[in-house]
Length: 462
Ligand SMILES: Cc1cc2nc3c(=O)[nH]c(=O)nc-3n(C[C@H](O)[C@H](O)[C@H](O)COP(=O)(O)OP(=O)(O)OC[C@H]3O[C@@H](n4cnc5c(N)ncnc54)[C@H](O)[C@@H]3O)c2cc1C
Image 1 (cartoon, helix red, strand yellow):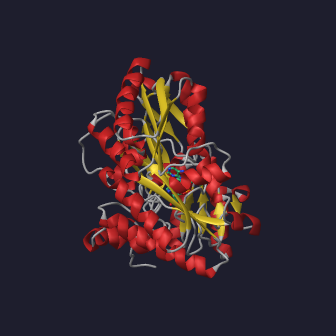
Image 2: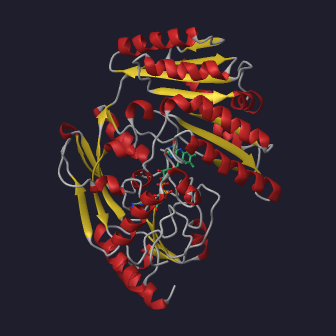
Image 3: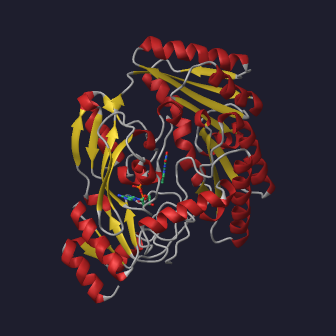
């Protein structure tokens, strides 16, 4: 980075909030994906006005700015592919306001997901999306990727809870979108434009989120199936039953085998396992829904059904689902984890198709995911130093994306596009959609300084 640019940035944030030391730049060169590229420098801004001044400098000298949360993204969205300045938002981590009567909270973007949940706990309220990375990831990252979680089928995703945002635009202007009201029909929905925009349109410096009372009762059960089609039918029958479980997870046979052979769990030999949780504001509500679910499981020939009688037994049933990802990851040095999503009725087709593709390429894989909202996670283990395996992985991933889109699905249910899925955007979106997305990017960021090279957006200035 040129000295005059460095000086201009240091003048804004102070020396102690600027770094271009090698060790920091290496840390900022990757996220949780396979992508890697070193930035030129990084800063820790403390307030919206500092972000605004930094963006004005970036626009003058035309260097890239990459807003960063905790770097847990799985699509390379935060990797500075064209170098530039990392804006690490972790020090803007204050919970500004909790207003129970208005059912909202106002936070800075660097607040960690679990810290907000802990702050809300005494009032009995929660912010439901619940990503598995919640102990680390930031709310700014959640909004910028439209993060979701295991209870998405019943409680939705981040987008469903964002009421308003403060955003610094690439030219440094500060924009407040949305409203504190629970409903509004006023003007174009700019808030939604920025949710899921992966840091390409603006830097989020304040977030207002809707909150809900936390359900106080839940019931958990686990069931095994000798036939994948039966498990698929369970999902479909539960959807018809008018019950909306808070969790409806599916694991295929490879996942069950890995938990048995490498996770130390005593599980039966089965083609599929389903984990269901029902919840509510009374015990009767959760129990009533679980009775309906068990009827569906029995009707579809579940070979073993286990219902937790206590919170401790529920925790035991959750153990396999929670241990799976790390048990599988240990089998090879590297892995990729996708988040393809299809209409719920297509989940059995997607499961069977992914399994066929991975076997055809001789890859070690597991498939698990949120059958209740159509979101599956194929995780493929490999060795990055083995060129043959790398080639097979890349062919298999392309085929999985084709399959998903042919089933009417989407490339990503929760992780975002980033670098990883950018080449596949045309499988899902029409050229007209992509042209409009690129036109919006060009309008908001004509010098292409904000997180360039992401989401397959084409810009005049590269
Ligand atoms: C073990 C593990 C489990 C995971 N489980 C889930 C899961 O269940 N559900 C899920 O959805 N994801 C999951 N993820 C992915 C990841 O945690 C989410 O995408 C999360 O939302 C990223 O948050 P972050 O703070 O790490 O953001 P980062 O990775 O730092 O950034 C992600 C994107 O957000 C942008 N961004 C960050 N902050 C801002 C800001 N203030 N303004 C503008 N743009 C910004 C970045 O530029 C980048 O494009 C998981 C990841 C791991 C490693």
